[in-house]
Length: 279
Length: 279
Image 1 (cartoon, chains in turn yellow, brown):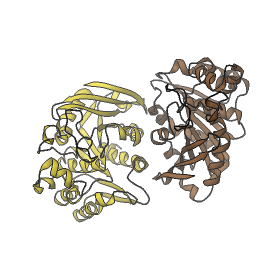
Image 2 (cartoon, helix red, strand yellow):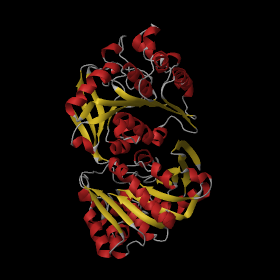
Image 3 (cartoon, helix red, strand yellow):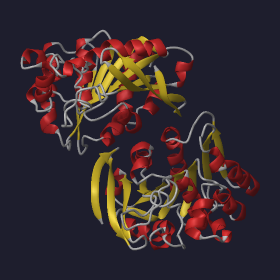
Image 4 (spheres, helix red, strand yellow):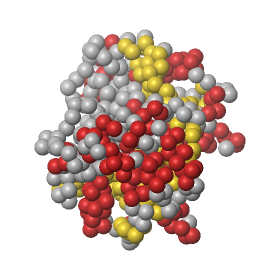
C-alpha cells in the first residue's frame, strides 16, 4: 500500500491510499478519514459508497462527512466505484464500465476479469484496512449515494452481521426494473435475471430485510426519480415493518448539496448504532 | 443576470449566476448561498474570496460554509477570482492572469482592460446582489483563503464602514515582500511600489488596522508558509493592539480540509459581528 496524500482535517487525518488489488487485478485507490481517536486505538468504520462516475474523491471533498465522523470518533472509508486503468475494460457510456462498477462481481466477458467490486468491498479492502490502520473490524456500518446507495443496501442485507446500520441518499432502489440496473446487470451478470435479484435492494428488503436500522433520504426534485424508483423500496420497507425511516425531502435534488445537508444526521444515525448505549 | 444552477442546500438555495460585467468587460460568474430566511426578507451577506486558480466553484463545493450560514441565517457569495474568457488577457503561469486577479484594479497593459477585481467587488457585484436578491447591504462581512485572504483583509481595511468583521485562512499576508505579490503587483500595478503598499495586509494593519474584529487562522504544515509570511501580519496585529485573534494550528496545511475544519468557527465569528447583541 502506498499513501498518495495526507491532510489534517477536523483534528484527524484525511488520507488517500493506493494498493494492488488481486480481486480487481489493478491498482485501487481509496480515501480514509481517521479521527483523532485512531491515534490511541481502533475506531469504528463507516463505509461510504459513491455513485456513477465518481472516484474515491468526490464524496471525500464534497459530502461533508468528516466533521461529524470526527465528532463521533468514526473512521470513514471512501472506496472507488470500479476498477481503473488502461488494462481494464471500459465502455463509452457513463453508466457502464469504469466509474460504474455497480457493486457486483461480474461473471460475463469482458468484465469478469476486473469488475469484482462485491468481493473487493467485502473481502479484500477490509483486510487492507484492518492490516494498515486502527480500525475496529467488529464495528462497521455502511452508507452510500445513488449507485452507492444500491451498493450499501445490498451489501448490508447480504452481510447482516457485519454492519450495525445502513443508510442511503437517493439510492438506485429497484435496479431490476430500471435502466439504471437492467443494462448493467445484463452486461455484468448475463441474461439470467435470477442473478440480478440478489442485487436489488427492494427485492432484498421484501425477502430478507435488515436486522439493524435503515435510513433512506430522497429529494422530491431529484432529476433521476424515474430511474431510482424509491417507491419500490419505501413500499418494501413498510410491508416488511423494517425498523428505520424513509424520508422524502421537499426541494432537494440528486447533488452533493443534498448529501451534505443531511450528512450530520446520517453520521449520527450510524454512530448511535455503532456506539450503542455508549452514545 | 442569468441563473446557471440552483440546488436546495441546508434548507436554503445554492445558486450559480452569471452577469455581464462592465467593470471587467466580460461575463462574470458567482455562487450565492441564500438561507431559508431570505424567502422572507433581506439577510446579512458574508463575502468569501478564493485563492489562486480557483473559480466561484471551489469553496462553494468544498469549504463547508453553507451549513453554518444556514444556521446563522447568512447569505454567502462566492465571486470568481478574475475576469475570464478568450478575450481576456492571460499568462501561462498559474499565479498571473486568469484565476489570479489578486483583488486589485490593474493599471498596466495588457491587464488594465479587464483585471479590475477591486472595483468589481466593491462596486459592481454589490449592486448586482442587492438588485436581484434579498440581501441586507447594511450588514456585510468578509473572509477569504490565501490570495482571497489577502483580498478580504485589504478590502476590509479600505472599507471599514462596510464590513462588520474580517477573517482569513492562510492569507497572503505580506505580498510586497513575497513572490506571491511582487510578481503580480509589478504586472498589474507597475513598478512604483508605493501603489503596492495599498494592497498589503500587513502594511495596512500597521498603518490603519480595522475597527471590527479580525480572525486569522494558519496551519503549521502549510506548504506555502514562506510565501504567505504570516509572521508579518501577526506582528502588525499585535503591535497595533488589533482586537481579534491570530491562531496557528498544528498539523494543518493549505487545503480545503483546513478551511472546512474551522468553517464553523469562522461563520460564527462573522455572525456574531453581524447580528451583534441579537446572537
